[in-house]
View 1 (cartoon, rainbow, N blue to C red):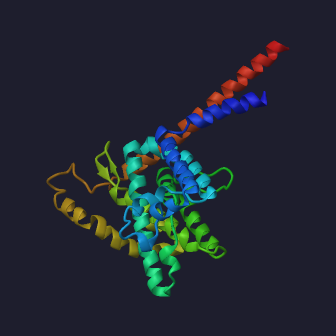
View 2: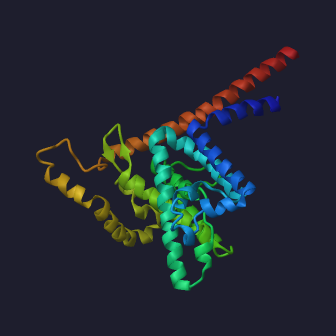
View 3: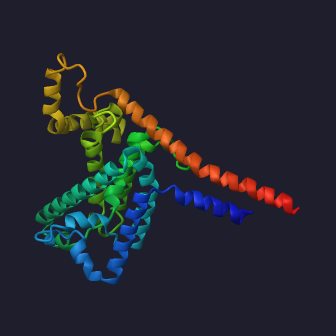
Length: 309
């Protein structure tokens, strides 16, 4: 009986993954196999700051190359589970766009950080250390989950989902104190969370509402920090708000009287509530879809056992 239940549960488990997430997982696995067979490929695909010029394509390829088996397992599992939750809500096109933009901007951030650390410390290891991995996009996924279902509580950890990005950042910083090469992963995680928030806060377009971004207070940059730090973070965040949507806000405010239907893109608080409701509803539907086949299999197994008796 138990083996059949596990088999039925396994079918439900795997059918929950979207086709796009499976395809991206194949890309990650294929990249890992490639560098294991041809180690020299790391020099061309990973981000090596000293070689980024003229090998500029590594800004695009490094985010999809996992050099270690541990990184491959974490990235693949995270992509399949978290990605399959976000993709149905965002749509495949926007989901893929999010991954591409966050991975690219994360690579740019890591490149600038490595060059800066070299000029500060004069250590050439920052220039020739190959940096790669899907952890940037994966960290951005956590920001997306924070946006959609912030108050959902994780059953084992007993913490709310909205704190996941902050805990990952804190964990990476703590781990950097006990590892040899923290520069190979800490900037990737930090920039992944940051640019994931930038994209969802200011750039994401929602076709069904024609709105842009999510300016709700619950998704402000300060929401990633403890309460006593939020006033200071809010002052810094104001600068980014002026950079990304300051002019757009002014032009829309001036035309508000004549065009009542036009409002600040993404400024409707009702839209933020609807987004979270859709996220919670999608999560519940996925959980129900996973549980129902397993329960059906259990009932069928019990029926077969009764007939045999």
